[in-house]
Length: 240
Image (cartoon, rainbow, N blue to C red; front, side, top):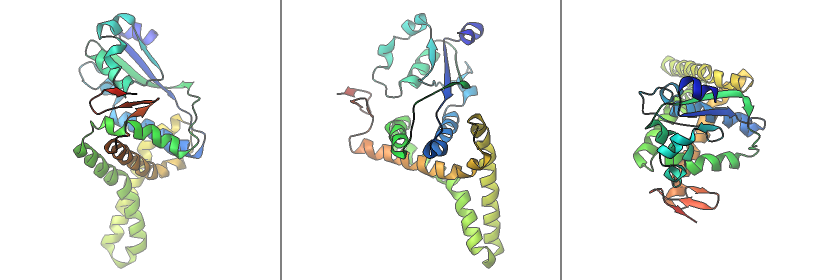
């Protein structure tokens, strides 16, 4: 409330501290927050001059007048990613704000890989606008950024004695891996996790790539966008 009133924001949202207790949560939940921030840079979300809009569905404050002005809940009733859809609708009318907090914690547990997989696969292809081009670009980008460095390290260690050029590839791969870990560290620090977890980030990226591909496959099979007994089509209609 203070943020909304003091800074004149029509919508304020906080991404609460998600649970990261099990192995799969530690491997994937901080990475989820990291990728969310890459997809929706908070500085751009909070800049009224930028079109980027996002919100975290677990904690959103919006004034009633603003909600009525943008068409109410009916405006987003057919949207699977309804929190970000609401943020986009509100930002058309006025400024919004999105931030992180470690003072409010989520109790929802994701003990098994399948639970996180289904959460991501439900919306990933929707986020890509059901575009094969966007999907291909995402998978290529994820491969280059997160899988190539550790692969280069392994290749350099195995074959480095045969060629100084191959050894150089391994060294560059290691440097990229370390840089990746450094960039990931602030998110791990927020979750009070050991710095060594940063070295697992390529595996996190690999699994998220597979989840994204799985989301597309589910859509093509007609089972994508299933949520609470309803199925959301590419056009935004709801069945069930």
